[in-house]
Image (cartoon, rainbow, N blue to C red; front, side):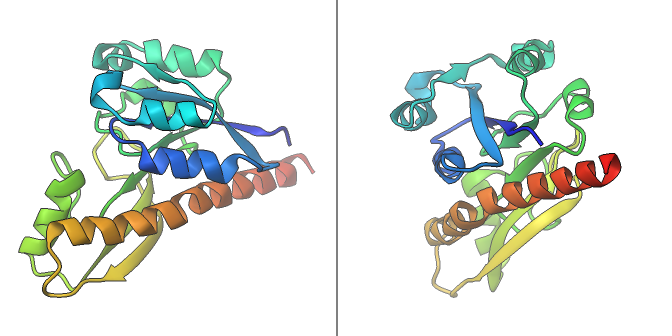
Length: 201
């Protein structure tokens, strides 16, 4: 199978995107070939992170996501897989359909709990704290056109202490994300490659 081409979409600091880029740097299976962000460089740390790894981040507007321009960019870059890493906009139906079974998202809680519209970043960790949870974690799931409703692919959890504030919860969850997200993507791509070879075998 040809080396798979990954695109990463992010909205913020890009720490997960950086972890993914570093993970696939020496991979024989896949490469990150395109990174996009819906915020300008003045409002998002991802540009600096990817630049330090030799890849420029492409800025785009929310309207370009809706009108299909971003899908065109992905297609012209011959992208096979789309990975959302702290990306806050809803993915349009056409793009979901185009990358069905090849687009995943990460969520900073154990879905189906603490998911849905408005549940991102510190909002999630504050809700987890307010609910008095004894654990939290991260979820990798397939992307649908509804927030956080795609089938779960992978979860990892961490124990919470009663004195943990939302900031500490965020740190614990981020460690899990950086440790496992790229591995989960790798496993999905390997599974798909095996399925393809079985079909053509």
